[in-house]
Length: 356
Image (cartoon, rainbow, N blue to C red; front, side, top):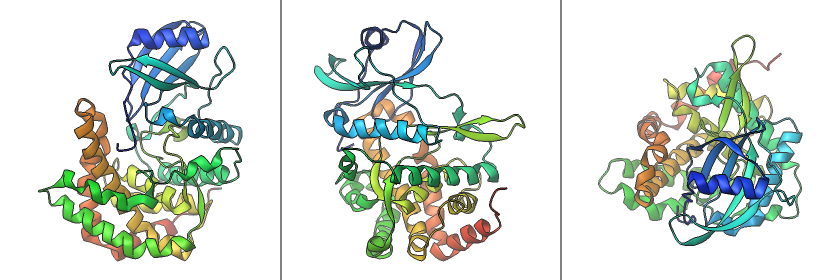
């Protein structure tokens, strides 16, 4: 990403040493976990506790105040019934530590945290029933409602002007469109950007503001089966894209990413929308922006993934997870058009009753 710098590449030995020095933990198992910009390790300590060691990229590590707000938000959500991770203090009582180490790029500063490990599997690995889609929409809305009540001395850090993944900054994509040169997809992305300019930008003064998780995607939602074998959401991961945004942004992001995992993507919108509206009914301005914002998030995901692959070719498999399917879904949604897609979503959403 343009606003990222070095993605850390700590060896298992370096990670093990960090755990011992910062947390006085001896590991029995440590293994890498997939990541986009940062580096994550699964950790099983000799006391039987499970953790995730998270090492931030060198760019984000330069803003510890922002990471402090994100870390607090996770704890605040956890205290208010949302299954988010919490940070484990270091031996000196700090929730994060800035470490200067060389992991192949010369000495860089990396912000390190040890987070609780949440059991479960990603929602992408289980059947996406209507009930689970409904619950995902409901959870996204509940999360944003809780975050909106949060107070913190550094909360203004979440404004994040110019943050490339904020849907408020979609027009920044125009300078990355060269990564699609020669592909028909480029014309579709240009058309969506124009739709955003005419449909969404004029409505921003009327949209309800909030704090967004910003990346409520199919790899950041964990589920577990209950005693009836029905999957329930058991964890929400990765608050690195938190930003001051709008409620409708979170809903659009949730719909877009879950669509990439569904055999009939257009069906996703109605069930997720119904779950969302059980907590936060949309107003007319929000409803009118939803189609354009879902397509806009597809464009962000596709263009920025291509750009990231240019920067990190060795990480292509992970970076392109959503992108490969997303190309076809975006083009289908664009061909179907706003009126048709909205009708499908709204008619489907209307069939749901509030949960008993």
